[in-house]
Structure formats: C-alpha cells, structure tokens
Image (cartoon, rainbow, N blue to C red; front, top):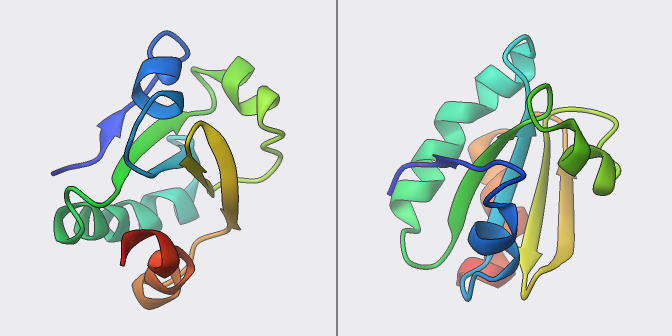
Length: 107
C-alpha cells in the first residue's frame, strides 16, 4: 500500500477517523530531507500494510493543517492513533530509526 496524499478537505476522514494508526508526513516539494525520507516511508507503508497507514500532507498547499498541529520544521511525521497525536518524529531519519519509533504501534 503506497503512501497517499491527504488534504485539509479529507484529513478528518482519512486521519482522525481511521481505526488504524496513521503516520502523517508533513513535507514540501522544495525540502531535500523530505524527498530523502519519501522512499523510506513508501517501503514502510508496503511492509506494514494493514498495520499502519502513511499519508503525506504538503505544508505549502495545506498550511492551515500544518499550523493546527504546530509544524515548524519539516519533515515532521506525526503518528495519530484514535484521532490524537501520540508521537512526533522531526527530521529525516534512516529506515531502522523510523521503524523503531513506530514499533509499539505496528507490532
């Protein structure tokens, strides 16, 4: 399952109402570290399909959502469980570090 794009219009349904943990990648087109972490998130999405949903929110296009969650540095990856942020990962990280951060939620 590949990562999907999320917007202010569908954020509530896709992220907040999800019964599965959702990792939201707050990113922007111009952000080098964001582009570096994107293929890692694709791999995690595929490997843990059904256990976690990974979505991408472009902070340039959806500034209101980024502001609501206090995103001041990108990439920031917020993990939502039951509609609440339970973990925040700031900055590009290697795959093992991201998986380790998510381990208690993805089994």
